[in-house]
Amino acid sequence: MAKSTKQPVVIIPNLNGGAELLAAVDSLVAQTTAAHIIVVDNASTDGSVAKLRAKYPDVEVIQHTINKGYAGGVNPGFKRAIELGADYAAPFNDDAIADPLWLGKLVQELDKHPKVGAAACKVLTADGKRLDSTGDYYTNWGLPYPRGRGEIDTGQYDEQLDIFGASGAASLYRVSALQQVGLLDEDFFAYYEDVDLSFRLQLAGWKVRYVPESRVFHKIGMTSGRVKGFTTYQTMKNLQLLWYKNVPRKYRWQIGSRYYLAHWLFFMRAFSRGQGWAALKGDAKGSWLMFTKVRERRRIQKSKTVSDEYIWSMLVHDLPPNAHALRHLRALWWKLTRRHI
Image 1 (cartoon, helix red, strand yellow):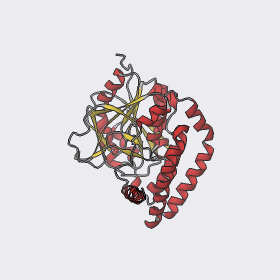
Image 2: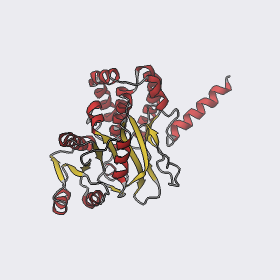
Image 3: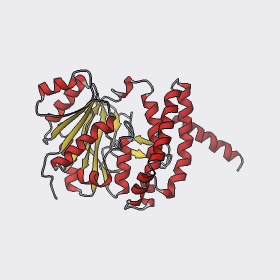
Image 4: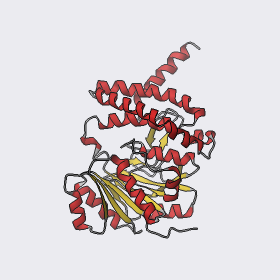
């Protein structure tokens, strides 16, 4: 078993994290496995960086003059991990608290299994009662979802297993895998960039492992919830990119036809909620970005080392559990078509 020889790097993208940022760093300093901590600040205006430097002068800080989003807030830390020669690097949300064994359990898993490119932990709500994520999945509808979100944690997801994707809230990546497949796609800005990275890892033959003994407590949506229409815009933009870049040609239209049905349903619901302009802008931006990523898609698909059938086997062949409107429409369609059989 080859063990890592240098401290893992933990990267916190910060945007006006305030007291939550200090609490996150407190939990990282208390880890049983020591780490090099990097805070990448996305032009905060709340004085959180000054307070961080006063309390933890040894924490490395990278400051942006503009908000570069989650992806732009993690990638500089990934690059520093490469420069430092670290074996592993872990993004960590500025509104999360890590159990003292969080990092050590993930490091042990990657040390034991050289073909695992990322290790995901159990992410719980701040009170520890409900699940936020036990790994990300991607469906044959082109829709990702966090496994177990919203469920009361009764130990139903306490089995280690290979999963499709690792949540960006708090996962550990093998640096050599990142060097092979690339870092987070900054065009995503926020949302699903972690699923995109996991998809690229899967295509390149890397495994993603869920480690339930590793736990984090997360205040969900603390930052994005402050901006009206933010989630709608990013969702309409990024789901298109996720499908276009990564789905193999064999299943591209099979998944795409389902996805665009869901896409237009999201579009109509956004209008009904007064967020039509955000949906329009997100849709237009996503369409433009797909046009610019033709070469990137070719490179990703050309370099894949697994079969299309393997990727198909890793998908969930159903709608996400929370896709209630789509489930209703599907049930209605089945009912109507069965009448004519």
